Image (cartoon, rainbow, N blue to C red):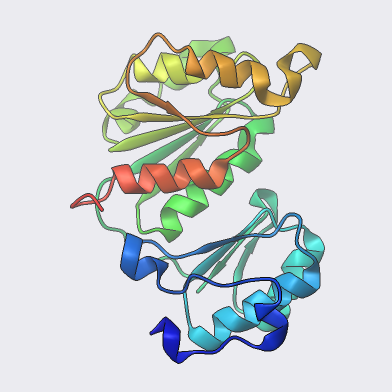
Length: 228
């Protein structure tokens, strides 16, 4: 139990890990690395190793990843998604399938973060890339897969139109992720965020800009069987 373990003094100075989150919520803790020093992330990884607690490290730059791997050398490192997972092997999938769509190749890092999060939270997951609305035939070619999903994640920048299109084609809830991809008036993801919030298709939930982890987590919860 959590109260049987005393964190090292250097860790207690800046972090209190929630090792019992999996018991309380059904899903393990994630460590957001951005804004933390590599030394802080390394100390957290050492505590994770000591407790044996499954953990995701998100928004990990190269120096964060090196610090994690120094303590957890077998952790799975996915540089494109800026994510590390420990243990490296995801659990056997349960529940329904999650399908993640990347509107364009530039949206792929966020989509990969969502995909890997859903996998490491115990869902079977498929990633479909480069199916943006500039060529609707590309997404229509995957209708059978989309309609077999319990939840669909759509990562899109620019005009952010793809989640509305997908939600009009499937029965499953759609989790929309606006990305910071696009020319000036995309405003670093604000334009697609507003488009997604104003979707005329029902059943679209929207997470924050570039929040692939939040999208993958929500999709994993939706696809849980029984729901968590």
